[in-house]
Length: 200
Image (cartoon, rainbow, N blue to C red; front, side):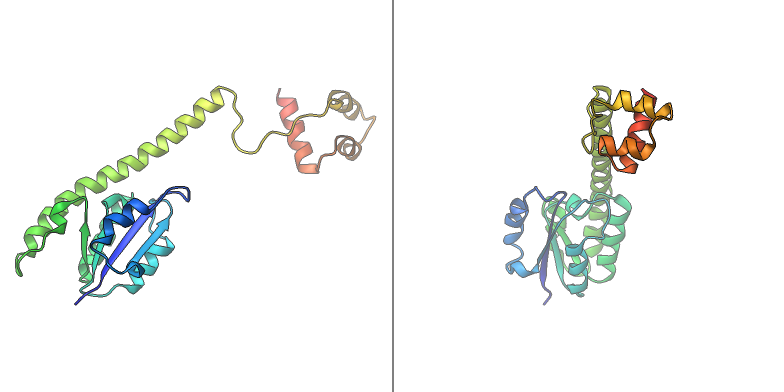
């Protein structure tokens, strides 16, 4: 008799796994067999997922809430679904009722055929959603930049005496080191500010 495993995932540390845990509880009675990750679905190099793979054996069943919890990369999802099939591990996806059905012995090909069609559609949707998220992020960054918002570390403001010192430095009256000391900047920051100042 195989073991029922569960896998839950959210993309960020701020998100909550409770809803997925609740969905799995009726199928996976021992919580030690529910593995979790708070990580992006773009690849499968996640600690919880990899530890689960090591623990699973032929005859076991894996329960997940939805296909996108496994990941959002279509080719990788298909690769691992094939891997589970080859290893004799049944995958049951709660949001895909056909995957939850038990079939008479010798009729597995029917469920495989239905599952393959559904998985093809759902993995394509999961990958499309990941691409949409990336596009929304890049559009958001572009809009923020267009509005003049600074993204990343806060910009170092130029000291009041900068204009005067810059002119003296360019005129050879003070050295770069003296200039840095006067404005209290390290070499890297100083030359970055010079570049920005000259670009304006």
